[in-house]
Length: 584
Ligand code: NAD
Image (cartoon, rainbow, N blue to C red):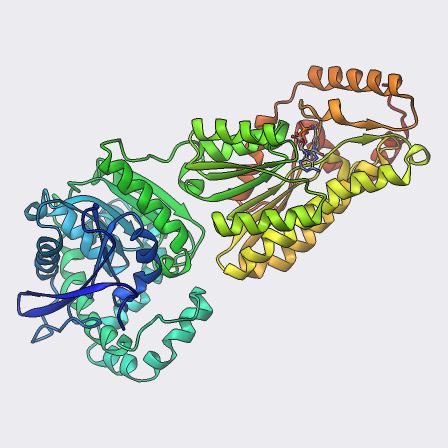
């Protein structure tokens, strides 16, 4: 199989013939993609196509894989020293005058760690992006440190990684892996990848898989035991490194990278909720991070360091917030922006949305866009979803925040009032979940939906029948959807704030009173909210924490937490409080 639009050449080195593919403009910085086990360069096809718009992209089949030839004999033919020779030969052929930006996945990353930490490649590597493949030297030291000082926590880490490495032991057995890969395992592998790793079906893996996997067993046999026993003491990276860690990797524990700063002076950390094969499952996110990293290194700017409390988790993620022009929505957009996300700020007020997007960019968003839409308008929401998916891709996080206030007894609330509040507060959330959630589920790589409900969802009140009903519905919708989407790794959270100092009082409707009285009540409640003075930024922080920890229902503000507890333990008390007529 050849990569679409790629130019191919052969590079001869150390008795093997490497198949090298190039895409994009050779005048641009070179990004070199190194594949893992049991793969060939085609594992990168989706990432390469995206990067080729900006860079000179180079991929090669590692010796013994794809259409590169295998060393003879196999034993001793796959040492890290020989793999480094191959890398240098390819780099010299495709980019003789400029250092390359190296990107490795799985064993491609393991060997790239060698390239970026040995002296003879110095000056040939501009940066390195590592995914799911540690340095064997760092791994050896990591084990050594835990064996030397075995606290219970550290022993747990050792056992945890030991259990995830089951396949490494198997690969060390003679002949068995070769038989399995050339037999039943090779036939079943594509289905296994689809089922357990959620890798989409298509033109990957390629037909060379059985021989790639059989030859690649020597990557392990030639290197792992020797290096883990005697790790190099000076395995320091001589180029900036970006580490992308998928949080649900079945083969590698996140803890492996705990001590990495001691080996890498310039380290950027990224995490994403995904499994091992991110070049196949998250090519959008992976290429966005590579592009950002390479561009900053090329521009002589410090490599992006994940900022904010959740920088490593949300950096580069695509987040859409409705009602982002004011209050909780704006603060939430800013919090994601600070963490380096790509933010889509949606509001029915075009100017307010534009301002949020502009400020988001200033405070650290990887990018930000404004969109105007009324969340209660199904047609407008469909158009919005079309635009967002076409221009930016599938969302990682959706925050259905837009909402309006409505206060007044049941009998003074007209059907028009009911319609309006349900249209915005409930239907707005339903449209968002349907239109954006469906694509998240279809992508099969998880995500998160946050619905801003309210403490009113579980705290009855004679003054807020319509508003509370809308929010109770949002709470239950969130719980049901959470159950339905759990199997697809999509978390759903209902955030339930109490009284938060925003503009909501200025636009809230008060029923059963004339205009003058309505305006007086708005002012009074605005004063009360001002006196309570709970900042929307704290709600935003709760939103990010809830996504990071996949929380189901999150009351925010002390009174919301108190009422939540009472609704469970002493509902009778809440019912009594509900009878009290508020004086506004
Ligand atoms: P806010 O009025 O400051 O902000 C709401 C934003 O949503 C505004 O920019 C507004 O233009 C936008 N919006 C309103 N209707 C819209 C629609 N149909 N389509 C698109 N955008 C629309 O209010 P806030 O306090 O930040 O409220 C945000 C959410 O938090 C709401 O769902 C609200 O019910 C909920 N909430 C607020 C409080 C509070 O005390 N402020 C408490 C609990 C829950």
